[in-house]
Length: 221
Image (cartoon, rainbow, N blue to C red; front, side, top):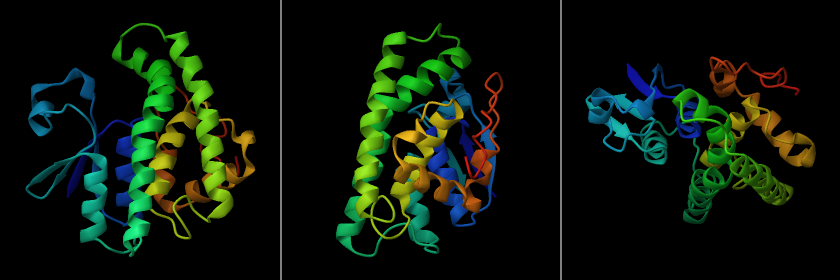
């Protein structure tokens, strides 16, 4: 049995969960308070980050590397294009969301509104919250621009790029920080991806002290 050490509102954990679920790879979920940096967890991943996957005798870290490992070892259904140019675009967009979007939006909104409380590090920094709320508009507009030209973010097929983006947006949607009225195109894309069976586990997440908003698990918003 695969075992995934994760935190429910970690977008990197969610990207791996979506990939494994889409490929029908069974996994046991173990919630990890990674910020406590317990000696046992630090032995699994000295970087002190989630997700960490126990796969057979291997201990794997870094969400993109884990996802691409399963893309190579469980090729059906494919989440990467066959051509080099297509794979480049998927990796570029995964990096966009996991680096730029995370730094400008997720860390500022989920980080301030949720993680400060669960980590016990004080009250939200209003400047960071305002910065994240402003930045997400730019990113939603960028997604709108991409999706006007493509069926999915990286092209005509759903890929890891869609899961990377959906992982971040689903965390933000859990705390009602996505203005779905800003783009009907983006809203339709998210409704399409969250209707997939792979998304069921994500929609069932419950964070103590942070109840789901009414629309969160509603496939029709």
